[in-house]
Image 1 (cartoon, rainbow, N blue to C red):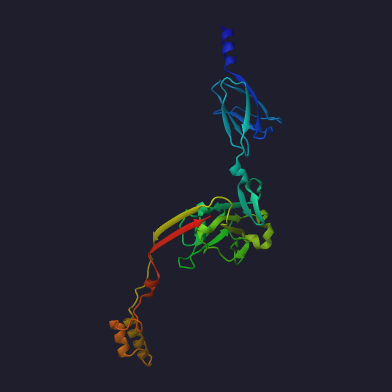
Image 2: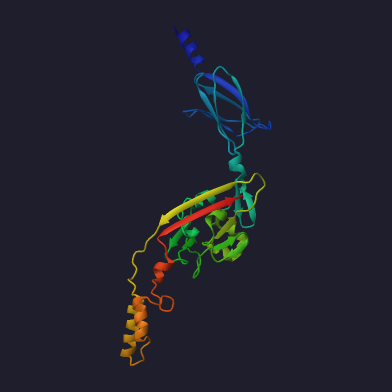
Length: 305
């Protein structure tokens, strides 16, 4: 009876060996080999070899290695498994723009955060600086005004490091600019933020507050691609003073002149023209604020690349 039990226990513990290689046939040392849903695991040796005990034939082995796609293999009736891991091309070849050109993300050591066109376009804002809010670590944006032309955000990288002007340097396609808020978001390829001393070293003391690198789109080799994007939005004002008509304004100007013992600016005939609109070119009655502003904003973009 005891012998039967011993045989059954041994049958439930199976040793699996094998070798892990890459697509070119080179062995991979240091690959993690784990039994799925357990704490049982080993690491491949200098020649990519491993040996691991599994509970049964239904066990699943997970192979994980930095820079490669993880792989799962069901043991089944195999006692020797040859594994080929595939490189994670997207992670290794992703290019990050740094102060002196471009560098692969896999070899990047400085503190750099990057967002691409797709992320920027997720926020349809009038000023592209406002689209960075909450999308880059260590970056704070504050929009102090909604005034057209002055509605950009004040950008600080890891706080203020200097007195006075604490804003980051803005480099657009290798050229320093005071701002990049007026760029069309559709024309931006990527925005990189350099945050620490190692990544901003090339800029010297000027990079004390960080550096923002903006790369715009350029032509690429391959089939032409045409893309369209459009959006419509409604905006309103929190409070606008009620405007006087041209007639009331002219009337009050004359009254102010009389109070100061000055000659009236407008004659009675001119006041009548303001009032009845008989000469709209010479004596117009236009609310210029309503004339030059719109509540409905439409935007259409066609990108050829």
